[in-house]
Image 1: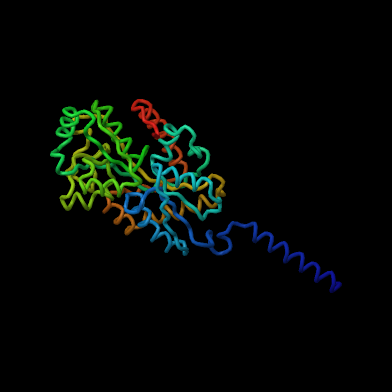
Image 2: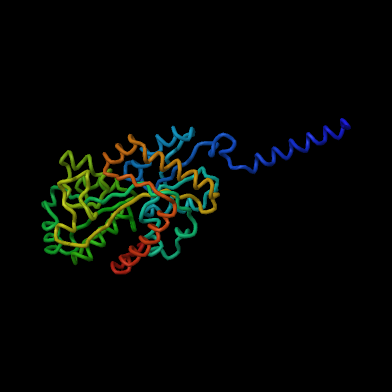
Length: 329
């Protein structure tokens, strides 16, 4: 063969090989992520979302061979973080550990929400589910849901409850309780569950619909009192604490959850790989032990199942928002 033609052929093959390698999924080159991954959380450090994210991120980093950095972008009930991720580069290096509020409630209370949770985000997997806990400061002088309701009805508008932010799960749990109990109670939003619990500990607020993770240590120490959980069933973390439903309000249920999503244009094969890695991490025995110790029940699943949950919760909480007349102000 002509040496010049052979050299040209080898060069063409090499160029084609480089082009194919560049076009291949990133994990075909040794890893599906090639630099540190950012796991965004919409609330302040120390709250339930932050605690869950850090437990998961540690094992996830080991599994994928890349650092996973938890980044707190607190404010607006998680909406700031959700907008940030929705508009991030869809290359698989930015994930959101999202909450009920920013995915299923915010569209019903914010007139010009800068993202559409049903169109701008790609579901990956459910992470954890859990009830919130209605906790009170001892100075409030209540030991049960019945005591709380009596006090609220004796002094309409004088009982305030804190939550992790407007439109968050704690806010909605309180709003739903106000509806079923016909109570005039005042919502006080914070930039996360930890700041709300901190003010409860200091006596600046009388009650909080808190996550088990942010309130658990203080319940166990006796500094605050748990009088009910918001789920359908009692929490394994607080087996002696009744549900609101069994405390005289049958049918009441407000379950909280955190789930992983990515920018909607993230390639489907990368979303599928993230589902695989996150399900593997959430199924790890030590990760499950740590999450359960914080009252967070791991519930990894398919992207399709998460999409259906988001759609269902979107409709459910839309009705509650309308009935409770909740606004972003």
